[in-house]
Amino acid sequence: MDIQLNVFPYPIYLEHHHFSQLKKRLSQMSGKKFLLTDQNVATLYQDQIDQLGQLASFSYHIVPAGEASKSLACYQEVMNRMVEEKLTRSDCLIAFGGGVIGDLGGFLAATYLRGINFIQVPTTLLAMVDSAIGGKNGINFGAYKNQVGTFYHPAWVHIDIAYLDTLDIRQINNGLAEIIKYAILTDPALLEDIRRDKSQLNYLNLIKRSLEIKHAYVANDFHDQGKRQFLNLGHTFAHAIESISNHQVNHGEAVAIGLLWMARASFKLGWARQSFVPLLEDLYQKQGLFQTYYCDNHDLLNAINHDKKKQDQTIHLIIPVEIGNCVRQAIPIHELGQWIEAGSRL
Image (cartoon, rainbow, N blue to C red):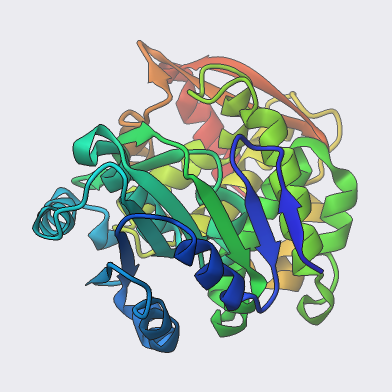
């Protein structure tokens, strides 16, 4: 089944084994095509890159795989290459990879000549359900996550679930964590769908439902000033964990931990009337998701102090009250320690 989602201000093509459609759409675009990818994706899909290389005015650039490529140094390296290729505003950049490539590519496209066409081709489940959609992009600054970035829409997004075939369990779980987030926000039935064995998961439906939920939060709040902030559920803890682990804990793994910590803290601090922590723990156990990360709470609090969501001496937390119901609350920074303590303790 092939689906075209038009809920965002750009088309999202959700398909299965349709590389030919990607090639056809790119061939119909005028101008130069500059593809950005990483070494892992290039190794897996060199044949597809070679086929795209048959298109007129096509070039590509490969960066090292991993979070380290979301850096000012890598940004400058690729920008230099784009200048060498003499790309113009009528040309396009294609981000072919996971979240790192999508974030880096989006930031490059947004800032090169103040904006050129940008196409997302996500190859991980996490990128398909989250980072490739919604227009956020950016790079890290030092140890801190996404400190430099822009809001910039792609022209269109090509999602082919055939790319999931090459992912290991850890990468699949990165994406499942974000899908669990959507379920906690608004859709208990989606949580039940994820409780199935991995061999029985319908990824096409999971991705489609996730994108519909994300759109409901992104619509009319592109710049993340209101309702879209609910998508940060679990992310305050998650980004801090990523930073202090030096990105040894992947984003999705950190989100899974952050979701569980927020569920635990919400009940212990009296926001949730009934604990749904056992339900999440059972789901995490079934799917093999990370449940905790051992660190010094002072280190965690220090990392959170660099969070983009901090305003003056408060930070907005998205607090799960029950599955399908969350609230947004400004928490004074000096009270954040009790949330960390309540969330991290079993």
